[in-house]
Amino acid sequence: MTKNRYKLSTWLLAAATAFAAAPALAQEALKIGVINPFSGALALYGDELTRGYQLAVDERNAKGGVLRRKIELLRGDASTPQQGIAAVDQLVSRDKVEVFIGTYTSGVSNAASDAALRNQKIYWDTTALAAELTERKLPNFIRSGPYSANFAEMGVRLLAESIVPALKKPAKDVTVWIEHEEGIYGKGLGDIQRKLLESKGLKVLGSGAHNPKATDLTDSVLRARRANADVFMQTGYVPDSNLLLKTMREQGYKPPVILLTGTGDTYETVEALGAEFMEGVFVVSYPRADISEAFGPGAAAFLAAYRKAYNRDPIAPQTLTAFAGMRMLLETIELAGSTDMAKVRAAAAKLDKPLNSYPSGNGVKFDDTFQNTRAFPAVIQWQAGKQVTVFPSEARAAGIGLKNTPRK
Image (cartoon, rainbow, N blue to C red):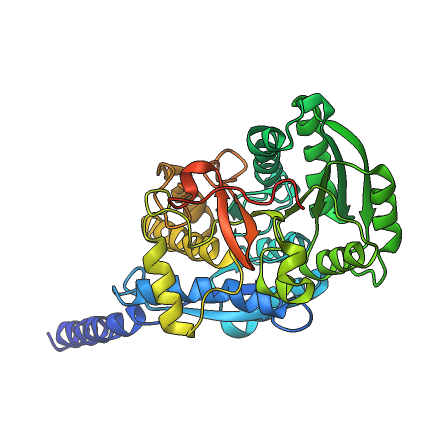
């Protein structure tokens, strides 16, 4: 009898201890590692992406978090692939991070997601563009944002539907020069642009590739100037794009149409080049908060939340896509009931929301590579020193249209 009483007491004590511990476990933070550049030339944009993530986390934490757990973001500073690997390993071993999100550059995403796989962690990418990131079919990689082909397609659509009519030439007589940075992002996008342009009947006169860390791009500009195309298309990052545009200005090279891809849509560019030079320049870009509310429901509320938190307008358009991407990730974890890699992927495969479901205008439906097939960029034009969404037509606000095309 005494022995049985002892067993019962031991069981009750263990049960009570487990019950008391349960709320504490439920309150343990869900740690998400953010892999982005937080130092160096691209730190401004790593910080900006993370502001989008943080706003979505704040929104979710205000509603009780995910899986009854508050969400905490931890930063992993990575400007190079090697730093990406080190940041992932450190955040797992030291900080017990359960999931990763990023990334401003494709090279870092490529290496960091490999490192996350070795640690059996999901890597959720919102903004890196290289096609090969999903083509690898890593079992831990999911991309909620658009990718390079979407940017190429949107730029060519703009040319065919809006710019060719503005130039008042048949498509077969419109000439294009393609310039891009030489990495996996720029080269991949440039190859797609060429195929799409040729399929639309436009004439590609040639292309050039440059090192994104170059300090002199005179040769690139001179090659394009000799071609004398109607349209100059450029894909790169902020430092090389700004340098290229400055060199064009210094060389007096002013093509009728400048169409940038993925960069050139921030105040850093207009401050470096001046509003007069940038007037009429197009940028295939991530959707920004000036899109119509019908296209991006909640875009105005996102902008208000950003202004309240940071006392300014967003620095870069990627913030809105990052915000929407974090929303998707948190919804997926809730649906999975876990941060387990396989369970999150299985839950992501079930997501099915139409376009215009998120403030970015995007929806969500993943293909077999876990690329979101309902994520697309938009196009802005610099008008009077401001970025204005002009394409597609359903995304632009009332009274907005193309200006200074061709450029005077």
